[in-house]
Structure formats: C-alpha cells, structure tokens
Length: 391
Image 1 (cartoon, rainbow, N blue to C red):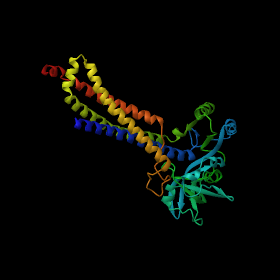
Image 2 (cartoon, one colour; image 1 turned 90 degrees about the horizontal axis):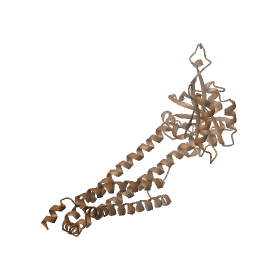
Image 3 (tube, rainbow, N blue to C red; image 1 turned 90 degrees about the vertical axis):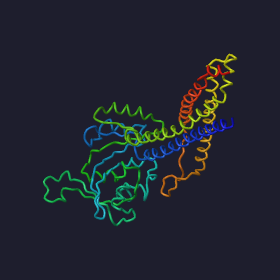
Image 4 (cartoon, rainbow, N blue to C red; image 1 turned 120 degrees about the vertical axis):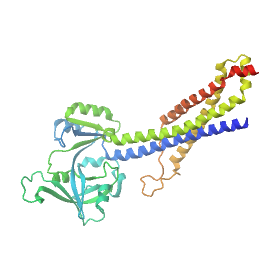
C-alpha cells in the first residue's frame, strides 16, 4: 500500500514538474519573441509598399502625396535600395545600400539595435552611414577612425561607351557613424540618407519602396486593405509579418518544437499513473469483486479508478501551473536567472505571460490524463468475473 502511494506521489510530482516546465519555457519563449519583434519593429515599418514588377517606381502620384498627408500616418519614409560594392582599407564586400528619407528617423528607438556608435545619418551638413554588423566584420571597419572613409561603387547608368573602367562606376566616400546588429537578413545593409543614395545611384526621382508607420490606435489591417485597393495590382502592400515571413515562421516552428518536446516528457510522467493505478487495481481486486456483488456495475468501478487517475493528474497540473506562475512573476520582477553574456541586449531571461499558454497546458494535461486514466479504468474490470468466482 505504501509502495502504491509512493508511486502515485511520484507520478503527481512528475506532472507537477512537467506542467511547471511547460509554463516557464513557453513564457520565456514568449519573452524572447517580444524582445526580437520589438527590435524588428523599431527598424521595420508597419506597412511597406513595393512595385510588383521592377526595382523602382515614381512616388510622385496624387494618391501617394495624399497618403503622406493622411492624419493617421505617423511617418512616410521613401527608400532607395540597391546592391553595391563596398571597399574599406583595400578589402571589398558586396552589400546593400539603403537610402532613407528624414521620416525614417521618426521610428522607434533605433539606438536599441546599435552595437557601436550611434544611429546618425546627417550631422553638421555631412552624410554618415550606419552599417550592419556583417559589413563591419567583413571589412574590419572602425567607427572611431574618421580619417579612413568607406568607398562605395555603383554602376554608372550614364556611362555609355566609356573609355576607362572608372567611368563605368560612380564612386562615393562616406564615414561610418554606427554599427547595428539585427539579423542575417539586415546585417549586410549600409543605411545612408536618401540624398546620398540618389547621388550614388543616379536615381533622382524613383524609389524602391515606401515605408509607413501609423499613429497609435490605427487599424493596420484595414489600412493595408484600403491602400492595396487604391493602388491596384501594380504594387504590393506588406505588413510586418509578411515582410519578415521567415522570422515569424521560425519563431512559430521553434515554439511548437519546444512544446512537443515537453509534451513527450509530460506523457511519460502522466503514463506513470497507469502503473500506480494498475498496482492499485491488483491490490483492490477483492474489494472490487465485493462492490460488484453489492450491486455496483462496471461503469461505477471504472469511474472510481478514472476519477483517481484524473485527480492525480489535475492536482499535479494545478500545482505545477501555480509553481510556474510564481517562478515567472519572480523572474519578471527580479530577473534572478541571468543570460550569462556581457554582450546580450537583455540582462536576464525575459518573461511574457499569456493566458493562452495556461489554457493550452490545462487542455494538454487533461487530454493525456483522460487517455491514461481511461486505460487504467478499463484494467479495473478486466477478469472481474474470474475474481467473483474465486470468492
């Protein structure tokens, strides 16, 4: 009897630990997701308008000019983007120059993605470039060295039949003001003012895209549909999830992969209940036979053991969820579990509590517990007629 109680207790503790781990891991993952998306949100617009065909388009249309003056629009940034050859100290690198208008600087805390220096594109009439970490690492660029400029080469659209190779390229020099790190998709960028990019690329009018941010309370989805309907099929209007589709897919895949791993651990813990209930059934076989002799039907016997299994699972789940919740709240306020890296953007593991995670854990534990308890309950009436005959 003591052995059965010990096994049942171990099963309950297993469910408790598994449920707590699910809540903690999912909350930490939510925290990381919020941090990553907030960094991307500081850099990427809420809506991005691009041509469906070709690289550039003329933004000087009646609708785009009226959209720029829309009271819901917080910033309306023109962007000119193109692949270029970047040279520094004799080293070459194929990167992308991204020229942005002044409205680009209205975005969130851009300095939050800066590793070295500052996010400065113009100062005292001089142009500066903010470079991605991949550009900086490949060329060993020093932001502090303002005596060695970065050279940027772009094909000269007006070269025609030039006699020298240098005439085939536009070459401009610029000093770096900062280095940012955001992700592989962005770290090969060199961000400059739109005027500098226009001069380098010989593109006085056209732009590659328009980046829009809206005032708080604006229905972004409704704005996306309205803009798309106005500009027609020649353009695409993408929201943040569509602009960074791979990032959102990766985050979702990682979330479900981690969840499934912990669910397998939880399944093992809950199915230990089958072992403890099977031993309990074996110990109580005579009592079961007596109950049936007194008029208890099979459904009542199964219900007793089913309730026993569900009780162990649910108590363990509630205790585990409570323990996980307490841990997450303490981590949010005190951050006692550190990242362990001096270069991390955040000091401690982030936590974000979502109600859907608690519902998901309860439903998952409940579903597994029903299956395990159902198996145990069926065992309770197996061979019941033989037991009655023995009595």
